[in-house]
Length: 101
Image 1 (cartoon, rainbow, N blue to C red):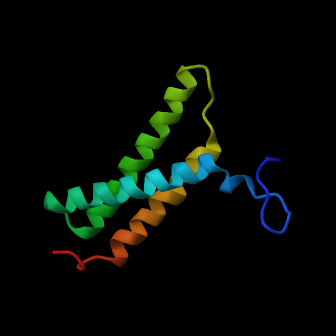
Image 2 (cartoon, one colour):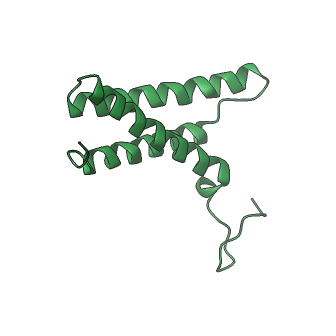
């Protein structure tokens, strides 16, 4: 973590490490995409959002299990970042509901 320092010289919290930001960003995008696909398939908004969050978190967990199968470990920090990203994606979907189409 020594390589990451904020403007004021204090260490950047581990959550903001590039790996965690990447996990959160990808999960936000996945959640939005899955929710839009679910809506296009005819699910109501709430069902689409719940399905998208669930699907995104399953993918995130399976990615961690894949890492483990290749000699790594399941990083619960990555899973927490996935949850944050999925929640952010869900908020984007809900905030923009009805704005498209």
